[in-house]
Length: 255
Ligand SMILES: NC(=O)c1ccc[n+]([C@@H]2O[C@H](COP(=O)([O-])OP(=O)(O)OC[C@H]3O[C@@H](n4cnc5c(N)ncnc54)[C@H](OP(=O)(O)O)[C@@H]3O)[C@@H](O)[C@H]2O)c1
Image (cartoon, rainbow, N blue to C red; front, top):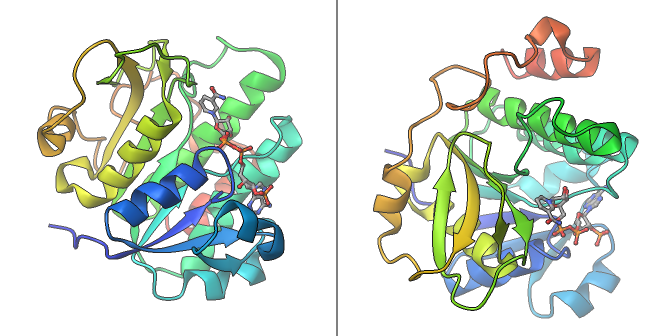
């Protein structure tokens, strides 16, 4: 059993998903801390929320922000170009995990559908997804209880699309509401059966979930001690085929 968290740090808290995660976590009674680069600007986006200054590219700024939190939700993202994907989407996860210095809070990581479909997306999108896939590997290697959510297209949903569809083949396509995604990220922290699960998330016409424990329990767990998700193709790169920085980060995490 993992402890149910009472406090959470939201990474990417000023973003389209992050600000909704802050609201959802507050609704669920969690003690919420928002990691922000510019507290003055963030005060307007997140009035009344506890703000802690930190830049994912400056590891020294993360230590204080992480003190005493027992859960972290990652919803940050760069501007989509491959260099930002390496420095922020991937590097932000690496820097936070290193700053934890062996502590293992509950983690919820948002990545994207398609991260394991190498070759399906070319160019900068393919590289962005590759860095997100590598960030997933770090989370699995961290030893912390985690849930990894690979959302479909944001807000590409219609009226009545309340049913949540959780898949594990990474072959699906579809949309998910931003509010729905935020709710699932927070519920994953609060639900024991979500631990060790990676899944794609879509919404379809139908009723909203009422049994969150059952929703997550229907999923298969990721292989224990592995770096990839349960349904991922076996053709993903070995550690030796990953960029040096990934090999080093995995090594620092004891993998
Ligand atoms: N669009 C889709 O349909 C879709 C589908 C699946 C996945 N995704 C993924 O979702 C992500 C976008 O989510 P979103 O719309 O919520 O993003 P967003 O609105 O662009 O927000 C990004 C957040 O990351 C923060 N951030 C960026 N660099 C940072 C740094 N160095 N240190 C600290 N925080 C930093 C930003 O903070 P500031 O306010 O300081 O800039 C902001 O809070 C992308 O990575 C995308 O690949 C998108």
